[in-house]
Length: 246
Image 1 (cartoon, rainbow, N blue to C red):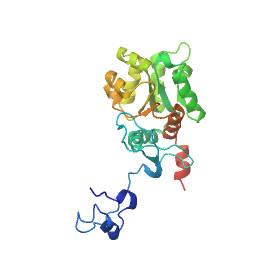
Image 2 (spheres, one colour):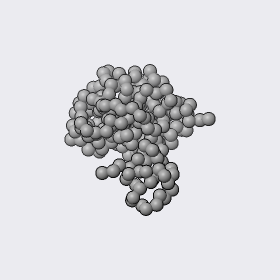
Image 3 (tube, helix red, strand yellow):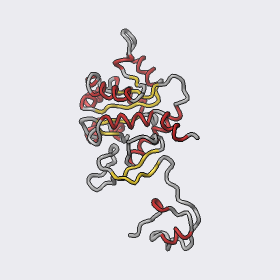
Image 4 (tube, rainbow, N blue to C red):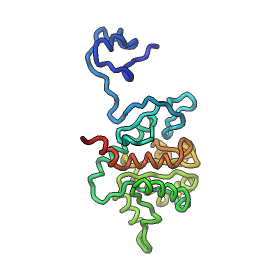
């Protein structure tokens, strides 16, 4: 089957459309409407394996094409699959909408209690090292402070939330504890990015189909340091404005 050349060569002239093997005979005459890529996509000519997004990845023969989202700074080394950009774009819109609100943290980190001194602390440290302000229960709930009230304030004062999906979290979710309440708030709007570590989306789907429906990032696909780099680009505006403003 002939393939349309518009995503690569564009259809910005009648001759370009006439030379396209897929379109030249379809409409009779070229309509003159230019091809435009989605607003958050910036194509990259490189290819890379392993970068994936949540539950919509195909095995083996899936697309390995990488692209750079427009919120990524010019000096960034991070590349994204089209699936990742589609999943993260609504979250980025939330970041931009909430950015003018005063005194917001960049990220609210939701995690299982058992992970607080392990992988949750590791992710927290990686984010902070990249200049990201993170609401983290180990640091932000003071002695004697009402637990649920502190979490409620943390959610309200953060641009977006990430949930660290681990075997420990999967054990705790059915009990409808604190993490479950945090997720309910974050799932109610485009504000949540799952980070899957040492488990799978299939296992998550057995416990929380709603959370599993949100594509995210997985340590099976990339190191936690790369995940932290992508989350930092997603939640902050500084690098984006440096390349976007005149």
